[in-house]
Image (cartoon, rainbow, N blue to C red; front, side, top):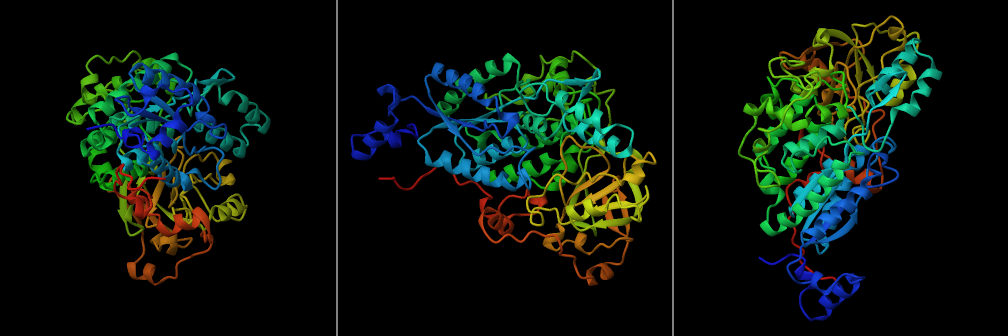
Length: 568
């Protein structure tokens, strides 16, 4: 089978002339129409995505690798999503980034692609695009930043923001001291150094088989990342020549391996939505219950924030993801191949743990059962999720009266009001923050606690919402409640004072009311988004619920790489 790019460049007609002539710009004649694969480098570098700002340097190393292997590297800037700055939420544009990247990969004369991502939504959007177009592809994760310190104590990006800001509200830390820590939080290039969503998705990409094994978690400033990037460029050329595509790598077994990995590293709940969306693009059968069935009983072995103590460069120093996965090798499916053509399990035999305080042995886990728990009940008929590893054990079975907030704005307006009828046994309920309601499902599910309870020493409460939370966050937080309030879910009918019952062991989330009484109530619709134009309108009209990955309904399933018509 000839190269896909040759469909543009081979021949002596006017169209092929135009394609070659405009691409010359110093490229040799041998670059066109022969046997040299054209490799796009889908690059999410952007000054407005600070976690990915170094990816231009990574791209240069990929280019060198492509040239060395006989290919032709081509820089392809794609939509970049900066988690910390985008409003109303970066998740609103994950599907747009995936769709735009998919279309650019399909429309251009390329044979394969190297995907450069890092910040939370960039790797998921790139994998969704690669799954949809199914050209040979692999991921180079941008890597975490090095650990910053303040007053001699290591700072975890995100996790310590939540912790320190609550201490300010509790009056145990001065605002001046809090603001001084800001200059120490981000020490170097790279994404968050906790096991937040960015680190989680890098590890998940490796578990799926879409990176060169051993790459995930390599710190962004480490020169080894550039060496791996060079190797990725070389491998991209080989992938084209061997016609090894994402659909051959990301099989159901790969997704189940990713779920085992997610549990063992104490990864972000956001990975649930992203994995469902990627699987949907491939047509791989995967549902919410697979996370519970496969993740149940998997021990937590990574002692990393927010579930533990250490940070990502500690994980790298301690042996990395492969050393951790060696401890749970018996739980992994050995059949799926990685982009190298070898199974992930083939890389585990030589992996060693060098620091058992960071990577725990199977016999001495941080938690014996760390999988994401999927809850169902009359409050979440489509499911909800909770991360037990980041929760307070004493709250995993709880009954309390609901204190309901109809929107984020309502929460901010009333949370610290002295007259708010709330105590430490209450269940804070936030609605209107799902895919349709916000829109985009923001990371607000880890509601701050009422100031008067913080002052009493309370540091965790049960919280329930149709939102997401940052992978760097922690607490007894029920997320992704489906259907969301804006889609007519039961959450829209809950009132302050209703008894909420959480039982994680039984996998239940209920409001203790007769079903008829709940159904007879009028749903609350205040605070829901009602866009009239543009991407937000398209998104709200077509986004699926969290239990299906919050993808657009018309993008589910692969589109392939075929282009039917010429441009001239």
